[in-house]
Image 1 (cartoon, rainbow, N blue to C red):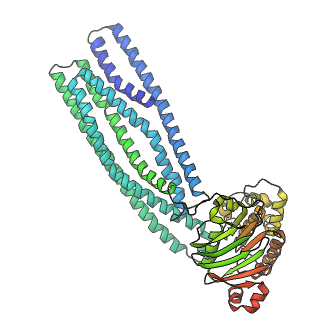
Image 2: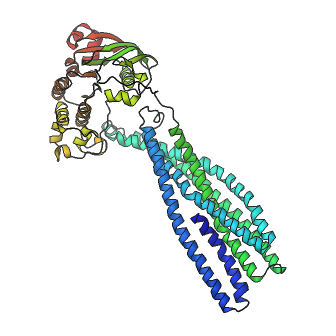
Image 3: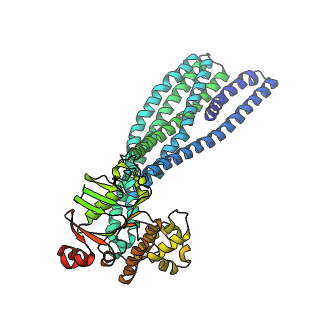
Length: 538
């Protein structure tokens, strides 16, 4: 409404000026001149105030809209049932949640100005109708075709804007991956290959951006040309009417002023149309994330309370797994060795409820995981991945991971994972704030802090994947015995090939060709099973 009031006020200015000329200047009436100058001042004050508050309201609406979209996208990406990240790099998701959300939010800010432009056109048309019916009809009948042409001209911009955002998101994703793996790339001397890869991606993104910029320039130029022709026609008709004596000098001034004013709403239409074209392209990308199918289903069953921690795999088939049968009694300290890394990843996905089994089932305390919501499963069964990231917080906050209970559990967990030694080596101890993803720590130090975080959570069932691959043998032996002691009476599954961790387990199973092919104590399997010996000791 405020933006509409501003445009209406802008349209009234030339009308009032025309009245001043006809009723005060040509007649020489000073009272009329003063009276209409006061009216003109009021109009200016109104349009100035309305523009200021309209711009503020539009900016607030744009920012609030973008914020709500970011929240919705974050909630979808972090949803317990997953699926939004499928086929998308993390950097691409960040780009969608920032750049695309901002573009769609901007639509909230420009729509009021589009409505205001319509209001300005209507006021101009009514004023021109009062001056001259042909002039008014020219504006009223000529505007709809002009708006249709504006929309059609915006189609190429919309298409190219979508491609531009796709390529920019891909480039952001590649950059994020390269930064995350910078240490590894340096370690293997792969920096030139990584730089070449990003350069290719960046050039493709640049080409898409230039095409979008070209489309933007053609769009704006075409709109400006169409607008100029339309305004010239209005001014020409008005001039002919004045020459014929159909309208007065003041009315001619008003008509010319209105014709010049029409440039503003048409420029606004061009701007709004461009923003809408880009917003539609970004909205489609946001919708593809929000509408992405979930990776797993949900259920209504609840875990047993209190949970005993019994886990059973019945004919589990998923990826590299081929009918795995495994019964893990409550409180068991189990080691799982796989000859195929893909089988370990598939097993963890099923246990973490991040993927639905192709066949068979996983039961937790005799309840099928597919019958429970993923977030309810994770209250009882926690999977600590090998590549778990740390956050830009203190060591202690990373171990707490948002928990607010007593410090004693955290201290015991840090001691069991030898993360207390890591803390003592840092300038401010456990209060030392880590760099992004824990990059200020070595690989072994990050593993120990991540393991401490998993142990501090103390779930009834804890599944840990390769927690000590970057830790020296002496420290690994200590961690193995400390985990067994700390987790006594709680179900613990260690998916690894570490002899130290496996030796501390109650029993160990070997998965080969997607099935359980051996089951027993670590020492017995080392002596009796060649496949196990090769997997663990080679």
